[in-house]
Amino acid sequence: MPVYSYDHIHLRSKNPMGIAKYFETMFDAKILESVQSDGQPRIDLDINGLAVFIAAVPEEVDMSISPVDPHLGLDHFGFRVDNIDEAVADLKSRGAEMAVEPYDIRPGVRIAFVMAPDNIRIELLQRN
Image (cartoon, rainbow, N blue to C red; front, top):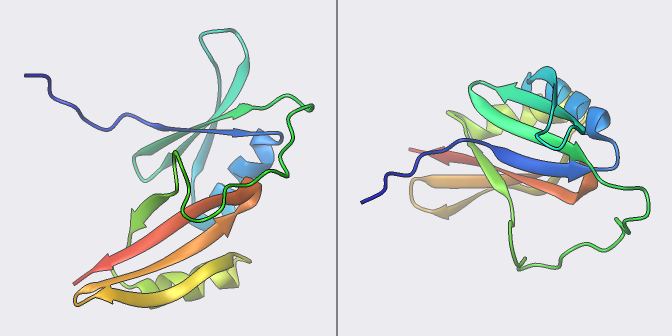
């Protein structure tokens, strides 16, 4: 039977370096520049061991079209935190926009959502 393990998240943006700088500011990501297998430039991020690749989208792509809740396809990705209220306060102090403020989804689990550029939703998750 195959064994599956995490490798990376791949995002697309008209401004890959702008998105990378956002993740650097908000989540202390390390920015690395690389080249994809097709020869196109790509920005890679290392967020505490989490690999995120950001590739460019052609200018003609209409980015105003945004999915509506509930999303089809990738809805969001999540970061686990020890103290969600502290994490949200830190992110807000860095200029983050919250899509959803922290709340308890069930006993022992608290979540919130950050709205990043290009309509990227990032869940923050605290499990007690």
